Length: 97
Image (cartoon, rainbow, N blue to C red; front, side, top):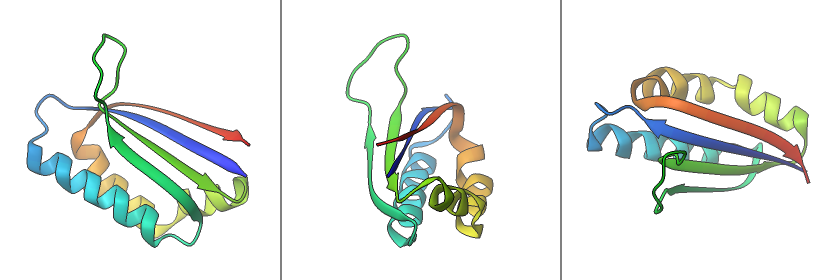
């Protein structure tokens, strides 16, 4: 099993509507992918200088399933149509469980 964790900080100029569209796109992408076994997406409720605005945790069968997900057309469209417009900073890690 592989866990993919993404932390996102939004651009200051990102509108509330863009952030909702981003969240909807992430949810749709994960929910409709046969590669994603489970996922959780949430907004940060804390505050601090090193905090991000949102986090995604997604589980995959293995690294190959994760690579297929990243290489897929839906993920590419998400990056082009949503992530590029609202993401200021992103941190990601994949680890085996």
